[in-house]
Image (cartoon, rainbow, N blue to C red):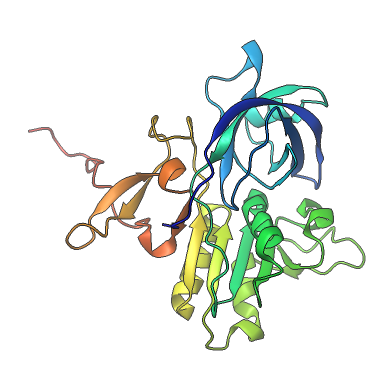
Length: 288
C-alpha cells in the first residue's frame, strides 16, 4: 500500500454551490464545506443528505478537486442516493465525512505514469494530473466513455486522449478513438518500447482487470482504485471487503481487506480477484 502521511478525516456539513451535468451521464457537484479540508488524489468522501431526509448509509465519492472550502465531485445517477443528489440545487445542505482511504502514489522517477480512467473513475486521476502533472515528466492520460456525448470535454482539456465504445456524438475539433481505453493504451507505438512505466487506473472492474493485465504483460508497476459499495467509510460495516494476498503469511494466503481503509488504491499484484474467497463456503458443502 502507499506509504504516505494522511490528512485527518473531518465530519461536517456543506452547502451546494453548483450541481449540473458536464456530459450526458456525468454531473459535477460543488460543495462548500463549513470548514477547510485537504486531500490526496485517490482519497474519497462519504456524502449524504443533511437533516431528517438523510439516507441510512452515506455514499462514497472520489474527490475531484478542492479550492478553498469548496470540494468538487463527479458522479452518475445510478440509484436512489445519486438520484436524490441530482435534484439538489444551490443552497441545499449535505453531510460530509472525509478525506478517507489510501491515495495513489506520487510521481515515480524513471517510470512515467500512464493514467487510465473510465466513466466516474475520472476524478481521482484528474486530481492526480492536476497536482503532479507539471512535475510528472512523460505522464500520459487516457479516458474511456460510452460515446462522445458521455465525455466531459470541458473538464478534460488537451492532456487526455479519449476512447469511446461507439464513435458518435464527438464534438467538431475533438478526437476520439473507437474501442476500449486499455486497448487504446496498448495500441500506442510510443508506449510499446521497453521502458519502465507506472499504470494508475480507476473505473469499472473489467477496465481495471484489463489495465492490470496490460501492465503485467509489459512489466509495468500498476496501482488500481477500486469501485466498491461502502456503507460507513471507516471499516466497521465490512461491506466493501476485497480479497488480497497477505505477504506476511507463508505462500501469501488470501485474506479480506476493507477497501475503505486499506484502499481504495491497491497495487495490482496484491489483489486476489481470481482466487476463491477463503471465508465463503463451497457451494453445496454440508455442515458437519
